[in-house]
Image (cartoon, rainbow over all chains, first blue to last red):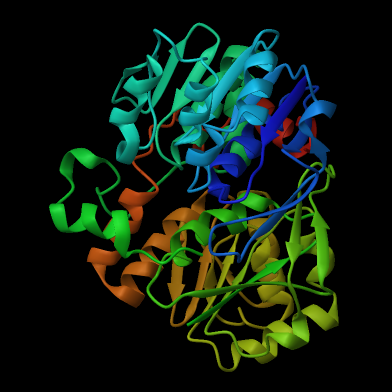
Length: 209
Length: 209
């Protein structure tokens, strides 16, 4: 089972690494980190680099495709080299998935046309431009297309998908392995109970590492 | 505020990347990825590489030190080049932290002597060998030493620490930014309600990506 993670400059690494820790542990998983070109990608603030071991053309038919988001995702949604690869890969995937603003890239590839989909709350409305039905849920399954909300939601999506693929026993073992029994210190993760000040801080006031 | 993340071969990347997404967004955060030597580190299964931009000697006095865990952590706990650096850095840090089996490295550096500490359930008892008091909690604060349980617990630890450093408003904005309103599909993340079969699967039966 080949699992392709798309890496790019301006990635939000948790979007990819949460699902990596889950899906990568599935029986028979072979993970491939794929970039537009081979080599280093960096977060927007430059402080974290990961390596894309494979160029797009080297991984044409992954079984599972995971597209993460981040500040760099908007540009990739309009980059035909990337969206063309996603669209072509999607023809033969078993599962096509996104986390956070990775949904914009799926949208740019035409994958979300007519489907309910979720993404980071900051760009939720933008999904409609791709023919998708913006859906404020943490994880949305539509046939083989699975979208997750912002950043940390990829862990919940991946565990749900792991159960679909390998059964609940395996998914629960993976959850135990990553000790995912979350205890958020605040009830502040959802836009539904956020203050205007806090929303503005997220939009423009936080450091970019 | 300089924040050093220790990277190494055999790292569990979520241990570092969860806190990266939180602590890196603090006002004035300057994140440095530090390795025993500069350059590429890989997960045990080789499928993910990250880059240590700095060697240990280049980052002698971080304000915050974060030591992640992973299959490679056991060896580093006995590697005096690494434990010596941790011990020396700890003399001047504001916060010294670990996630998962990164606690073994803090232990090897003598940092946990006489302190309550937590780690991944798989090695909880091993903390006693370092003079620590194994404590089955998700996050343990002991003065400036903060330890977190397995893998995903680093997110909870980092949000709690972010509130200590920059106040609750900032921590809540970061939590909103990473949309951390977890919805685990199963109640299976804690050892307290795990079956023997599931524990055995974690110990030896899961793929290593």
